[in-house]
View 1 (cartoon, rainbow over the protein chains, first blue to last red):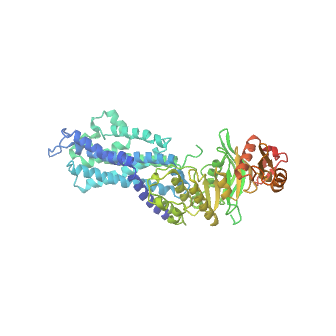
View 2 (cartoon, rainbow over the protein chains, first blue to last red):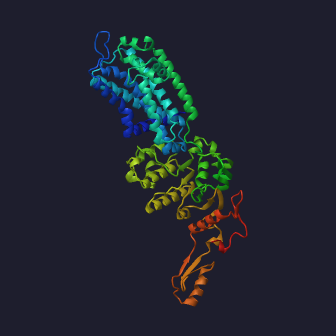
View 3 (tube, rainbow over the protein chains, first blue to last red):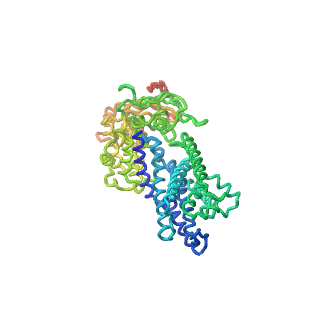
Amino acid sequence: MSNTLALGGKRIGYEVRQYFRQGDTVFFTFLFPLVMLTIFSTAFSESSFGTDADGNDVSAAAFYLPAMLAAGVLLSGLQNMAVDIAMEKSDGTLKRLGGSPLPVFSYFMGKIGQVFVTGLAQAAAILLLAATVFQVPLPTEAEKWLTFAWVFVLGVVTSAILGIALSSIPRSGKSATAVIIPITLVLQFISGVYLSFTQLPEWLQNIASVFPLKWMAQGMRAVFLPENFEVLEQNESWDLPGVALVTLLWLVVGLVASRVTFRWIRKDS
Amino acid sequence: MTATDPIVSVRDLRKTYGSLTALDGVSFDIERGETFALLGPNGAGKSTTIEILEGYRDRTSGAALVLGTDPSKGGLAWKARLGIVLQSSGESGSVTVREQLSHFASFYPHPRSVDEVIGAVGLEAKAKTLIRNLSGGQRRRVDVALGVIGRPELLFLDEPTTGFDPEARHQFWHLVRSLKSDGTTILLTTHYLDEAAQLSDRAGVIAGGALIDIGSIDEIGGAEARTPVVRWFEGGEREERTPSPGAFVASLQGRLGTEVPGLEVVRPSLEDVYLRLVSRGVSASLDVVTSTGSVHRSTSSTTGSAS
């Protein structure tokens, strides 16, 4: 087991190195939320997104910050993982690994570790961009950062596991982005990432509530939006226990699906 | 398994895909330290056989043992004793040659030295190059390097030199010979018959999913197939197959003078023997391969007219 863990650690370094050497993943996964935050913050710089309890205006950048953090978690986890593994399945990477004595557990440790490292770097970059360029006031209470920590970690791990499960859907590496990106894009639109969740019709809110992204975004809003925004949420509450419950539920679904569907190669295809 | 048990043992191996029969009762053994070539046309069943032995495919019926283990149930410790060079690879390759080899070396309990392996495949100058920036032949050398990095007891080489220039191929032959002298058992498939002749001790020829011949490189196809051919000019190109070319040339000299025009004495190469076998094997299966892998030839099967 110690060897499996040591190899998993090596895989993390190997995966992270590969990730940052691939220009397309760096742009569409890593930089994408930063680009979107910049666009929204600039395009809507004149619009009002409400005021906090002291009467200060909430800027577009402040309003979109939690949404982009949640989007980053989904992209770094689910989209990146699903496309990455589908590509590795079709280009022969998995076949080679399957013929080597690398334990499957070490492989997944490397994948989830890569998502964790890149997701964390991405979140740090988004926060830095918001705080410096767009002057978004960040929370100072330790309690808020604690909430951020668990929402982030749970969100990243769940997204990564769901990505592994979804990687078995595309039939080829070439079709992987075409199959996966629409899924993540629709989820982002209905889950309050690009459009304000409170303005969506209730039936659409209810559909979005089935999926984890709505809850991850809600958890992020609980951290970064002023307290008086809580009444705008469904049931007028951040509902953090709900965030934890639904995300954990999807984590279990993802684990079971990954366990059932993952193979090094499609035997006899 | 004991030291004298075969490294690979295959008995009556069958593989069907729906109504298609890819392998129809193939049997052979590979002994420890031996280099065995599996030859045959595309689609004959070579890769199916090799992938069953590598554990990538499940057999439909028959028995297979690789290093004493059923390959469909081989675990990590078993995989650590194998080296696999697959037929093709197209990985994104965003790591350098040295990074890739060091990484794979860490999977194995007793890996070879990364620098030695890079040297053995002739990629010293490319050690710090990203794999995606290598040429096709250079990437193939990385595949070979990855196959041997774990110091395998049994090495599968599935068309290893496709895309190599002649110099790289000779360098590869040198590498295979040094692996062999280290005691590595090798299963090779190739379309280059000179390569099979250079490297292997024995060969099996597969056509239409069946093993149509098996034997040492010098004997495969039977003695008759190796009968030398004498060619000369005598009012046009003439040709005679004879087991005693010296005497025959002497008789020609008696008739035509000391310098026989256009004289050539040719011993059929493995390629000639192979082509004869395969064209015969496809038209009619005259040879019966027994379960022990030896060949019984029906008496009517080998006459000079078979060519």
